[in-house]
Length: 423
Image 1: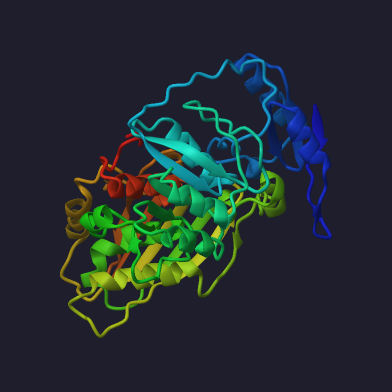
Image 2: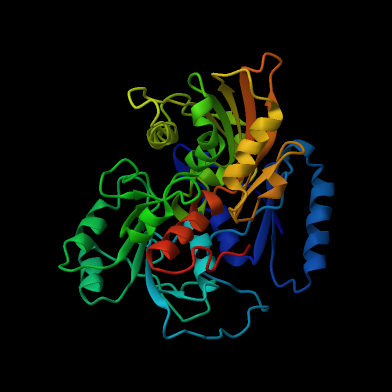
């Protein structure tokens, strides 16, 4: 069945769309209309229904996604007859993980990664909105969401029920939980925080393993996970720090999942609101601009009194996930060729399992959506040889969030960095 897509009016979301989502197995939304389906067991039949829906609705090409839309966040109800009986296969030696803030897009990706991790398993998942409901998409054991309070988290820590905590909460929310864990005498649990709250804090290790010291992450119990834009920026700019004559300018476009979810797991900014177009936002002082500048200063030891700054202009687009970013970099030398700069990137990243450098053309989103990698390339040197442009792409929910979190968690818990990450 089809409906007109809901939208926001006077700050309140129309409930019709939520009702349809609850009653269906899946949906497909384009150009203000939604197709919902239920009980279809043949994937080809679903594809044909969507194809007919697109043709009948005469949807303009501008509304169609560049890549396949990702799965929605973890569903709370599944009516599909295809769902089989859950199998339980808990490993007794696996380390226990508590996930605070499991409802959103990144939480969904973390659950999926942990479900397939050979040495980690979820023991607690917290969501105020989904309290009491069974966690879907996790088959190692049956876990229900709990609305864990600060007191609950402290008691779990006191009982040593977890080896590591993941804080997947909005900015400005997780400090009481962190303080509660840290207040427990002889607390040994690792905390990886995905918000921006501790990215500038002394005593916390910034977790970008490919660019900064992995050994420091291994020794740390408090790790701040980098932001998605900031990860892309630093991977593009890090190898070039000694060759810059001033502030680079970076332009980045992210899929709408980068804006997060609102109540009911709906996107804060939907494709319908974007109407098929790109929308710039936070044009100055974006927090990832400050984050990237702050940490890249660690790579400028030859100029300790010179504060490095990057100028960043973000935009949001009507595809679901994936960031593409272009950096224009002023150079302090004209003696290097494009080949030399390619070699600089290749020398820096050639042993990195999740990083790729492309000499042959500009990387695109189709190469990284639903993948755990970052790809850089598109390198061009201007005719005066004093300005360089490079391009980087990553999935904001994976290498820009969940995958990187797992790298940091693995390192800090003494595991192989890439355990549980499909490569």
